[in-house]
Image 1 (cartoon, rainbow, N blue to C red):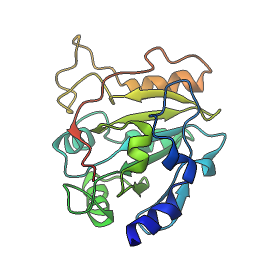
Image 2: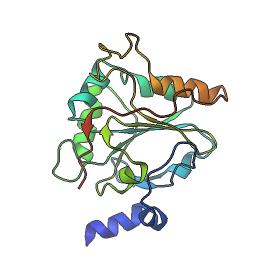
Image 3: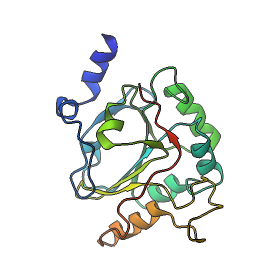
Amino acid sequence: MRSLLLLALFVPAAALADQTPAKVGAAAPEFSLPDLDGKPVKLSDFKGKVVVLEWFNPECPFVKASHTKGSLVTAAKRATDRGVVWLAVNSGAPGKQGAGAEKSREGLKGFGASHPVLIDAEGTVGKLYGATNTPHMFVIDKAGKLAYRGAIDNSPDGEGKSPEGGKLVSYVETALDEVAAGKPVTTPETKAYGCSVKYK
């Protein structure tokens, strides 16, 4: 009962009713989730800004590799330095790998990162966006539309050492550059790699 009450507090009823995953080119679904200190954070708080959503599991080997060796090293800092809002979302259910505020906090510290992590313990927002993996990346443009969804890059090892085609391409960084320039995103959707999201 308590978890249902918390869910009602943090996820709008419209989001609960509509379980169709977000689509590229359509409006990014509104949500409200608690940060690591329990403070509600809404997507609409950042209206008019470019937002990156990073599905996060600090104990996932692919997340660890990406944050310590691969394309996620300093990615959030570089993006926020240019005015982008970067939010990680942990949709792990209680008791599962990497779930919860404490493990998320430890993960950020270990990765030397400081961007916000939002806790989606019921998995409602993850399912609303169709997040399947950690990491799974989403870029929302200034108009509030989903401009990119998929992998962080084209190197499924997470370390950037085995890019498909031989050249490392950061899909998220490219999408951010194109959105900033007012151009359509060249590659708006790719297949995410990594661990499965540890839903309830």
